Image (tube, rainbow, N blue to C red; front, side, top):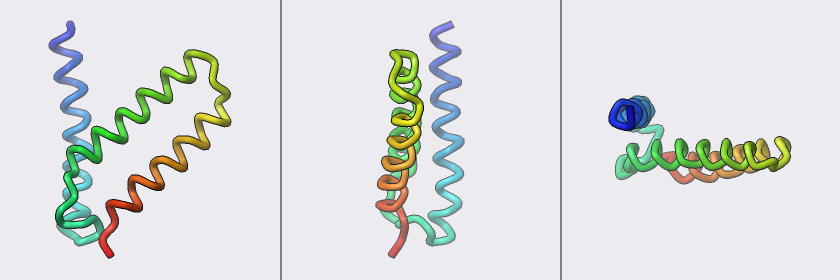
Length: 80
């Protein structure tokens, strides 16, 4: 089961990275941006915030954090 879950997780990250690659080709995202790392970062943030929610962190704080951190990540990825 671990192998299947790992494959699913990696496939999900690759799917998001491929999506970002399309934006890179259209010069919306910087050419030197590592889209796999960007995808992994966003996925890791989501995983961490889901764990925080399970531990009882207020949903309003989780939403605020999601919004602010993804904005920072995506803003740094945008082409000039």
